[in-house]
Image (cartoon, rainbow, N blue to C red; front, side, top):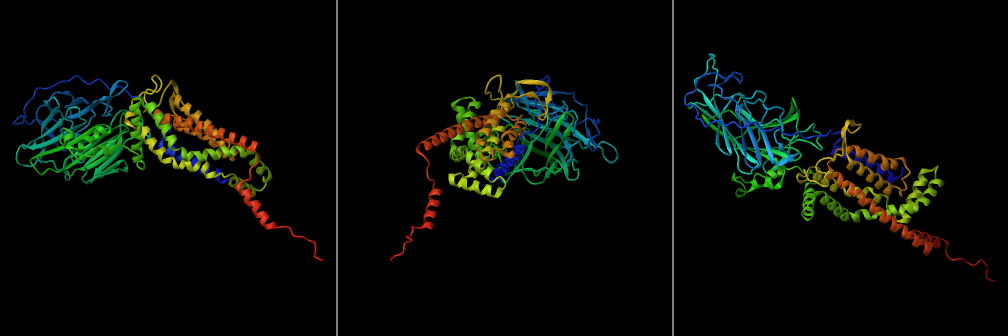
Length: 611
């Protein structure tokens, strides 16, 4: 097998492997369901904490914890700050709905808390270091102002004599928002009725609180390509990707923040200076394909009045909304140096290149306010910049088209001796100045960083979410296009939708491969036939559910490659016609061979003898 054929096969294996690693296989459609309408707001008049609680046990389910007094009635309250529509329940003092008002799916605000039922929500309190039995009692509720809500309840416990201990304590949980701000504050205050420390010491820990069960929007499955959840931690000015083991990661290190990142939205937990134990958990709950939790466990209390503060950013992965917490003058919280923008997903190797491409894409969008057209312009620019790499490859491919008769003669002449055939082919390549390595493999490898960076950009760039290219067809560049729904799933792809853009991509890939391989000496080899026909079909199934913006780039790139190849072929054919008119040329190799022959032969000597 010839060297260029081997390189092509190896490269195709690399491309296919990378394709399967980076792209979705058999990914079912993920229709976004409309979020339910918020429950009617029921507000309770502000009330004071009773000075002397009535010792009536409310529950005995939490490590002998007892909620004191009569249970308040179930209440819900909604707070809006311009970017959030937050709905709270006093059952467990939780946030059970958080709508992102500026980001919509099918006209409905995105739900940032993916839960399967109304009794699931974020910021439950758990006693000690456990995550399965929350304090689910009814709390008293009061609204401090338009952007602050507070929950409180008195608790005690059953002592060794099976009696309710008279030394009660109060748990107060407060949520505070700022106008048009994706960061809010959750505080927990535990106050003893006496100077004694509240008896919250369970193996060295007092309580656990955190974000759960999952960040939205809803999804049908995670495949870590087109839909994923990832954990990051940030400490000492450095971000680390968390490698989960058995779906749990626990650390006692002090962390500036911890992030749960989805494709477009993220949750970032920012604790105060207390050294909490941070636990990241992946699991399942009925109605949720996968849960992802950030949990903070507080050490045992050392004071009769403890006040802990947690801040959470829940919103889009956008530089402009995440970087404002680096300077105290840019945000109303007076925070600085949080570097939340570090939580934005980027290609681990080529993030710098992805950022450059993002700037160029936005520049084109400012010129033509359509991200589909901006992607096309970016593709043209990349093709122009890469032309020096591809020019020699195209010229070599065009030359090969004119050498097909000579190569066929060599194959016929040495059909029984592959070694001499390869030597003759190599001599022909050298004589014609053709480098098989430069015919496609090397340029493709040199373009690989751009491929990775563009994949990262077009697969998850937030601005493409909901961006319309062609109304009625490609209405969201972050999602696959759909022209028809089927009553069954398509074999091999598992999708019940017909998508036009992948079909167009397949056709352009087939024709592009045919044009670039038809003039190759290895085109007749079975491996090259696979590259021309088989590989495009494999990529078709791999990319069937890819985002439209990503497929648009590759489709336009294929069209430009075909146009470039056609132009190179025409120039070469024109050159061949000119050469035929001028007669055969002596190549440098032939000149060298002729010179060597003359040197060996030398001048003719006379055979006549002198008389």
